Image 1: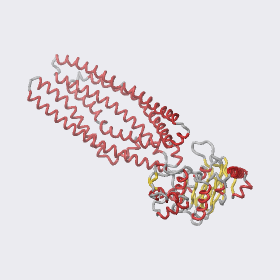
Image 2: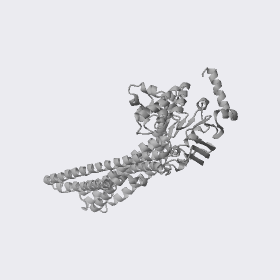
Image 3: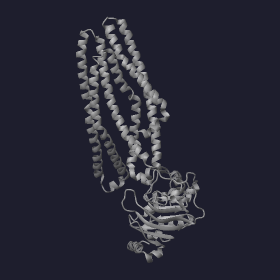
Image 4: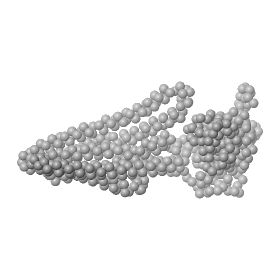
Length: 577
């Protein structure tokens, strides 16, 4: 929680004056039993209606003032808590966006979303309740005890017996429930993950008629949350009845011994009433304090979960902001190996090659052979565990990551479009791109034909995830986005898989003509797509089992030859050209 206190620095006045006004309300609340005692002893006891009306007027004034102080505190608490929450979410979101792929993989997307929403709300609520009740509840307990001592020291001993008993009950209940709240948050993570997967993969689920199985799995996850919550609720439910039982026994003792004190003339009826009121105030304050502890427990658990995200170091950035102009090599791998943090085996092993500016690199291999992993090292999404990767003569570790990635146009395997318009999506690489540049990129990516046929053209609305476009259209829009501004390197990570052969051929011709100055890194399962590559790397189980041109690999690499022949055979069988 201490790590997050920095977000309260702009709300020092609210942190001071909010509890102060709540303290004033508590003081006025402690005065009420004294006034009631005087009404009973001096007003009712002497049948003085004028005194009763005057003191009732004082009670009204105390109530109005208390209400004013409470509302002021509520306003200050809300301003502080929601301001705190806003700044925390903003910085947490910014930090998440600064994390490397490894950092994001460590926590998981669903957990990040849950911590950014649910956990920040819980911490925000904790700050709100702290300002409103953290001062009031303890002060009422101490204040009521002091006032009782001032009325009758001997009778107040009952307070000092009852209060510790209730405190022990609260402690035992808290000790049992605190660990259960953290476990409940983890169960929420799983429910969030299932929700995200089911919504994202709804078409796949329906295609395989797996709706009922997914419903059952989600039901199991939420049932776990319910069971944990019910278990906590059952334990917490013990608090009120047990505490009230102890309090009522205390009140009975006060009335019993208080009656004896009244008979002896040491205590008045009004003072006994005040005593009973103070006992009730102490109990209610302790119950509020117990609930406050629950809120703080949840807040601390959530704060620790948020802190775990802040503790993940952001992506390391170098300080070099320009490439080596004297280098004619655009990409160079020197004995590069890589292993994912959670994997035991290496995903890449001993990869070395170089590519000149303007050349095309092809990468081919079976599923899981390391093709995408190799490509992800170029923009430094992951850092090589061994060896070095150079872009334009500079080690990628030394580049400012923003500068490095502005040199690269990247198209992932899964086409990703964002809600907005086609124009807004095209400007992700370069927000200052002109319409002419966007149209040029769309033409190169073979996307202009269907975009220009839309009534709104570049202002065509893109729904969430681009679901109003077909798979091939989404791929071409993703490719076009990477072409905007003609970057030095374009990485196409198996991003033509949804294109037919004619469109794929047209795209490759356009690449050769329109992107002649850019170096192309193309990952593909089609040997025909890589025929004209200046260098083809054949991947197998994380190793480069072959390197060379198409013709060279047909002679020297059995894996490549096998892939090529299987595809040629398939084409012949299907009658494709």
